[in-house]
Image: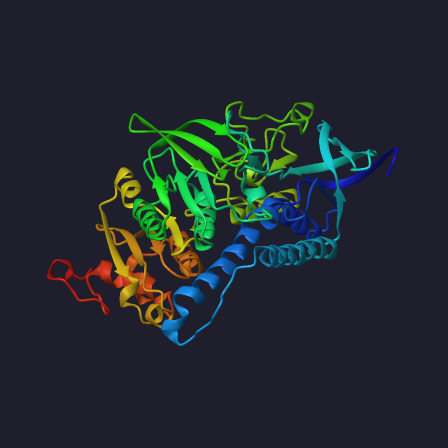
Length: 480
């Protein structure tokens, strides 16, 4: 589209990731003329370079590991089981492509137009659209939604090169498996992809600056995955500060300070995953008068997702933490409904989160320490998967569900789970928290048998001192 053109729209959405495409769909449903501009691929990082491709590869690795290690126990015997990385990558690509096509179809069905390229504000009601072929187009809008997401944080001295030193995007497209991989950062990506590599026989070392893996997560969950990784042969270093990196032709050497002592970790490749920053630069925000937090790069918004310029909104990772796709989904809908004049706002009591390791880690609401800090009289109870029929049937007895409740009122405060399918029932706990449920409400909810969700109801019964499938201890026998 060589040349310069102009067009007008009701709503301009910059970014076609989870928050952006949901905003585009909802605004279209509300009768608005919508343009969604995406510089790479519809679906954003989550669909193309994060959530979906990583889960596809993790699923393939789990299947491979299961056939090798536990199939025989259940009468499933396979010989010469191999993992074909090229075939797995091809399958992963097909999954992503199908999902991306689905997003495009949904936007089209809602009447939203999509443009491939980049957008930059030129004023409070205008933006410049730059197409890949060098053409430019002025887009005038009544309202705009910024949904540009986040990009990997670049740690000085540990810059990625796409070969020896990689970020998550590059790791998910790697053409071959290294013999060894050091991982700088023990957050979600570090743990999920570190375990994925370990399943495939890669020698893995995870280096985390904070005292535990998955900083900020409920400590028992962090201990659970640490133990699992170590049993799989992963070396875990916490409280470890990376101080330098030396690159050689066929190896990298990471210098790490642990408790005042320096050690060197040598590996074939290094995966750097030390967090993300909001993609708020180079958007021309100053031209539109949009305020940005100078330190964090986030764009401040209110509960209707409005920036300081009321007709311009920001959603998802660019707006505020937590950087979660499901949070972005909801924010995109709220922003579109705000533009449509509906009485809506982004308000939640509990935001669920899942880490897709083995076991899955799922959490929603307050931890014991958080609840104490807020002045609650806290008590917690933990029901083991080892007492769950479905867990035995699935050969998946590692894990537990923990209930955190207020001992004075019986109010449910938080739920934390480690175990197979934990991510599938954590939303029930989130719903209960949103509705102001008590622990007894959870206990009296009939959970279908045999399912993993029964562990949630059993944990509630245990908290109440009325356990059914674990032995009742006298100290816990007082019913509430």
